[in-house]
Image (cartoon, rainbow, N blue to C red):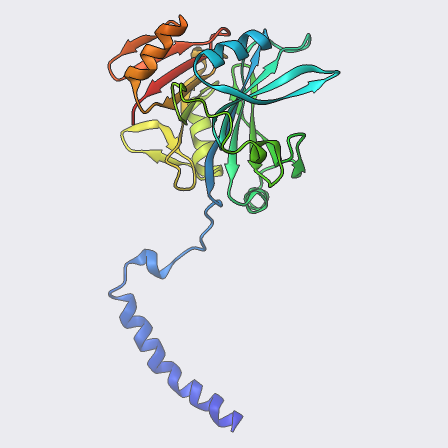
Amino acid sequence: MIRQHRSGSRSARPAICLVILALASILPAPLLHAQPDTKTSPFNGIAHVAFRVKDLAASVDFYEKLGFEQAFDLRKDNIPYESFIKINDSQFIELHASGPADTGPGFLSLCFEGVDLEAIHNDYLTHGLTPTDILKTNAGNLRFIMGGPVQPSGPQLIEYTQYLPGSLHREDEGKHLGPDRIAEKLVAVSLPMADPTSARDFYINQLNFKPIANDPMSMHMPGESGQEIEILPATAGTHARITLESSSLGKAARHLHKEGIFAVKNGATLTIIDPDGNVLLLETR
């Protein structure tokens, strides 16, 4: 019976081949040569941007005047060295105190929140990238780091995190969300690069970011967040430039005026500069 079954299979092969040839004449070529899906696992969005600041207390005070609140800080010998300014339950601005060996205030790092950090990490390894091992941070979350394209201050530091139950971030959910926040979401980060073309190629071809139509140096990250990075020339300097989404520019402008914070209105955008020269753009999207 088995022998007869195999013989029958062989006799059916010419007919199967004819079907395949017929399909070949009507199916588009890409369907006949489908490649395995190698998409990077999606990101939930931007987790944080980190700035190195010359005066941590003054910077915390400035961001609190913008309506944001400090969710928590990290300390050594009871002296704060890192402050977590909360935008929403998933996004933060991290302020790091400058040390004697640091290059000075400005942009420090960008961190993406992964849906599945291990899957992203393994995907990068299979594509020949060199992420660090996944470790648990002082705040209680998973994280790995990877070097990126060269920025004016040196190779970019790209961080990836996955929030864990019990971490400082998760324990702060629903808290420190002041009603006077001038914005509710971090939607884009601009990255000055020594070689913008190569940096764009790295993000698209290595990290699977998607170019935005009619804006060749801006890209959406993997996933459905709609959040973006923008590649700038190195002449933009070492300071950060981030775009925040505000539900009401009018309300934000009134709050800034009340707090004595100078802002420039340019059409549908408000521009603010923090004490270290980092640029905050407020938009309604």
